[in-house]
Structure formats: structure tokens, C-alpha cells
Length: 367
Ligand SMILES: NC(=O)c1ccc[n+]([C@@H]2O[C@H](COP(=O)([O-])OP(=O)(O)OC[C@H]3O[C@@H](n4cnc5c(N)ncnc54)[C@H](O)[C@@H]3O)[C@@H](O)[C@H]2O)c1
Ligand SMILES: O=C(O)C(=O)C[C@]1(C(=O)O)C=C[C@@H](O)C=C1
Image 1: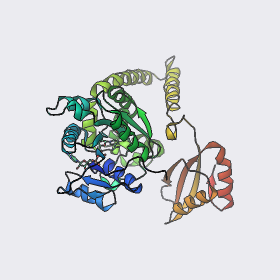
Image 2: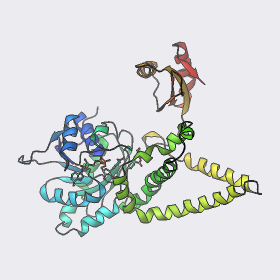
Image 3: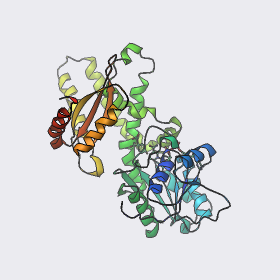
Image 4: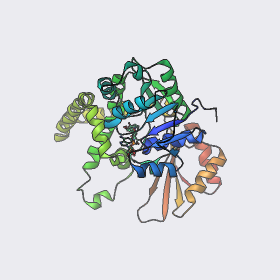
């Protein structure tokens, strides 16, 4: 592991999924992490999983960096309080929306331009549909984008510390204005959340026999529909104007598609359906691959495993021994059969070798 750019201590305020993951990642680099949360149980769990030590209010703490990882609607006020209480620290927040937080900070009485020079708004593009410190992972940020949105007031020294945090946690750093950030995440993060929730909400009252046929298509599209409503109310509300613009385009497409499906044999109907799918193909191939690099189509293979403890661990250990990197992994079960299916992807030029090696070792690979 390379030496850390941060020296610490780092105070993390808000020790849920993101705050505790940041704590775990920094602790793994040996940095002193101090944790604080308005929920004593969230703070205690974060301490218990090793994300840092609890803040002791009598301690004369002089943090190098404060990371505000609280919900978006309290973020500006928590940042302001941190700037005032720790005059030597750089303060970053990691909330999912940026322009509104900066605007509120500038409006808050008592937040001077000098104080704002120590603040940088940031957003790690990594997370999960789960909340709370129990779901935290030290590796959450590895190879994922981390956006820095410095304001005109942010000092070069503060931006450098924010940059160091992202780099120490293994992220790829991007720099956007707060407004450009909000426009980008409306499309790549907030719209997907809305579409996942819309699709999943159709399932609420659907007959159980229909759901028993659910496969990976449905799971892929709805994973994030399990996200925390309280958090997303704040995110969507704070980015409403940017979202409305995109959703008007979605509405026009949905209306067009409804008209097409109402007369599926009419001239041009098949062409319109083909257009939907191929426009989707064109957009999907533009999604970058890991490490912020160019899009890469991975090759998938499916391995049948006995449905008993330890089989998947054994499979992954053997793939590790073979020396091929697994890029993605999905698990599935055949209804009513004592067998599981592990679907995994690798870079295309490793697929044949992996199939051969696994077959030689007795695994049943479905091509
Ligand atoms: N979940 C994601 O996928 C994700 C990804 C990137 C960024 N974010 C952003 O990170 C932040 C935290 O999200 P999360 O998923 O970790 O949420 P979470 O619900 O898991 O944790 C939030 C924590 O903040 C605490 N908190 C609330 N008010 C506080 C206050 N005034 N002072 C101190 N602590 C307070 C809560 O008790 C809770 O423990 C949010 O701003 C969110 O927009 C989330
Ligand atoms: O992987 C997920 O669960 C996420 O959706 C994380 C995700 C995203 O949209 O990429 C969600 C919201 C955050 O602000 C940042 C990351």
C-alpha cells in the first residue's frame, strides 16, 4: 500500500453507511479516525466495527480534516458548526447534491469567506441501497469516481486535502462545478433511482405466481429501489429542477411508446420498438467501465455449484489460484433444485482460459 496523503486525525460526523465506510478505509491506512453521530447507536456500531474511536467532547481535538457524512438536509448546518468549532481543520461534505448546500452555507449568518476557504463540497459516486454502519465496507470507494466541487472561496490547500481523502480511499478524482455536478448526477444517479422505484412499485400488488418467475433482468433494474426513502426524498427534492428537465424527455418517450404499443401492427410500429431498444443499446455502451476508464464489454460465464456451504468460496479461491480477475459476480438459484448458479464476468480474452481451467478442475461450466 502506498503511503497515505492524509496525516490525520480525521473527524467523521455522521457514521452511517458512508461515514463508517470512510472510517474503515482510513483506519486500514493507519489514520487516526474520530467518529461522531447524533445517534449514539450509529456511533457505537461504527466504533465496534473498527471505523474509528468515539469523539470524547472533553478531548482537545485538532483534526486535519472533518468529513461531514450526514443526510443532505442537515449538511450545510453541520459544516458551518464544524468550521466554527475547529478553526484549523479543512471541512468536506459528501452529500449527493451540491449547489443547494453551498448556497445555504453562503446564506448562513456567521459563516465568513475566510471560513468558507476551508470548505470543499465533494461527492463519492459509491454507495449502496443499504444504510447505516452495519453495511459499511472499507473498499467501498475503490476505483470509483469521487467528485470535488470546490467553490470560488475554497483555498488550494483545502482542495489538496479533499483530493488526498479521495486518493487515500482508492477513488478516481473528478472536478466539477456544483451546478454541473447536480446536472450530471440528475442523469446518472437520480433518474436511475426514480426509474428503479417506478418499476419496483408495479410489483407491490402483483400476483405471487408472476413474481416467482423473476430473473436477473428484474433484479438488475430494481436493486436500488430498496434505497432509504428518507434520504432520497432529500436528494430528489434538492435536485428537482435538473430532474424535471430530464423527466420531460422520458415522458415524451413513454408517451410515444404507449401510442406505438396501442397499435403494434401499424406501419412503423416495429421500427419504433427497434428504435427504443437500439437507442438504449447506444446509451448503455457509453457507461464507462471500472477505474473510470472506457466502456468495456466483459465476457460472462455461468458455473453450476452445489447448494451447500462453502462452494462459492471454494470456486472463488480456485479462480484466484488460476490468476484471473473477476470483474462482476451474480448468484442465482434454480427454483426447486439443489443447485446454485454463479454468473461471473471476466475480461473477454480470459474467458476461454478460465472455462478450460475450471472444467479441468471438475466445475460444471455452462457456456
Ligand atoms: N448511500 C449512498 O449510496 C450515498 C453515496 C454517496 C453519498 N451519499 C451521501 O452521504 C451522506 C450519508 O449517507 P448514508 O448513506 O451514509 O446515510 P446513513 O443513513 O447510512 O447515515 C447517515 C448518518 O448521519 C447521522 N446524522 C443525522 N443527522 C446528523 C447530524 N446532525 N449530525 C451528525 N450525524 C447525523 C445519522 O444518525 C446516520 O447515522 C448523505 O448526505 C448522502 O447523500 C450517500
Ligand atoms: O450503487 C448504489 O447503490 C448507488 O446507487 C450509489 C449511488 C449512485 O447512484 O451511483 C447513489 C447515490 C449516491 O449519491 C452515490 C452513489
